[in-house]
Image 1 (cartoon, rainbow, N blue to C red):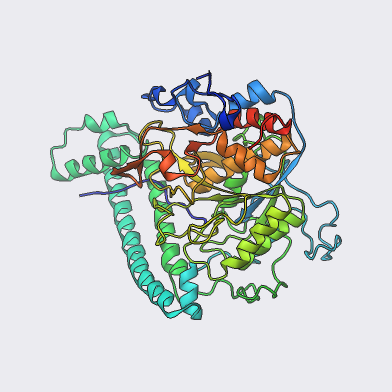
Image 2: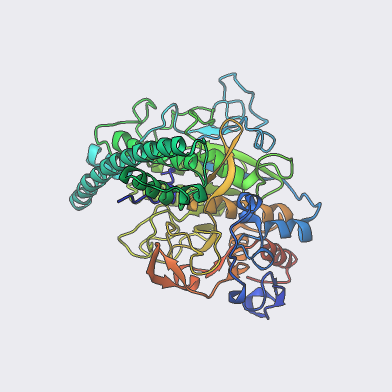
Length: 543
């Protein structure tokens, strides 16, 4: 499911030699003991906010991926070879000013003639393919399973219980957000009138002599809001997004009677039924922004004077529209992976996930197919603040079954970081797990492309995954002889090892080191990865 809820919570009432071993004497970015890096006390500047995921921990005391340092000190003017990265997601705004020059184009296909010119089984797939047809809103998988009676009795009983709980919570949250919105609007209007100005600061609020109970309440409400966001318009926007999110849950995601697939015309639980979809993987509505945001993190045109900079500098983005506003279908994901592989992608980004997967084997087989063809699959860990190693918290797809041995060596699962180095480094919403999560990368409030030539901040492991996918593309571009397995190992081995304990799930009583909650115990680092990739590419280092 693509939607990310903002972290808004409303309650009203080094350069050092690290030695030999697997790193081969790699020169790492931070000082020798990374945990002595000073905490950044000052708030991020506007420039830092827009680019924090590319900054360097030692230089900036911000836990980015050292992307800017990698370009200035290693890559410089080297473009490398072009790498196709498939964004398996919602539709992308293909005409976006910061993406239009980095799109993959199928030159063997003639646009608009309604023919499969290249014989790949897909008509008019110029920039990718759309497996959703004209559908967008969808149910969660377990709601579909209940509607269609798919699964054993124990699974259906569990799903029924979850649905009853989830629907009631969504309805309550929707109502609560609506009440808060009205309270904030009312308080804002009265304070603006009292101050005689349209905008005001925390200091303005603090200076109000509230002589009435109503004004005391207004000041208290707005003061609390401004402790969460910088301005009331931002608060109102977040509340509106929250209301829209919970409304979608009530009307579509958790509505057992809704069938979003009906207009597509296929049987989504029949892998042999392939006559569906079309060659237009553009976003259908403005709110379908997830894929556009993800694509920008990977490949927004670098240093063009507008918008944001992608991680990779020589990429062709293949848009595969397969993730609706709800849970994705296993069939679409499996076919999307195979489409990407067959049409030349070297990296596939999957910023999606779900707790139920009745046809998981279809996706597993597709991932194995990608591995056989030397294609890397980068996947978001999910946003439940949960331990994925606990069998009660599954997140599909993954690269092993029941916490067993990995069946494929081409999958990287990525957790999300906050820009705050220290105990709050791991985002409170990020899933984790020593078996199920490989590495962490910047994910909170990432600035990137949005539909209609706009740009927004968005949080989630959905944002951390494309950061790593962009890094993988950068490695493939500079060192084309590397295999998918080697790139995975390089990214995991070259990350920064954080030993200090971090808070998990936003619960200060629950903390652990990164080595206890991820396979690598590290945060991704482009500078280190390029140094290591150079050694592996030349045969000077074996992984």
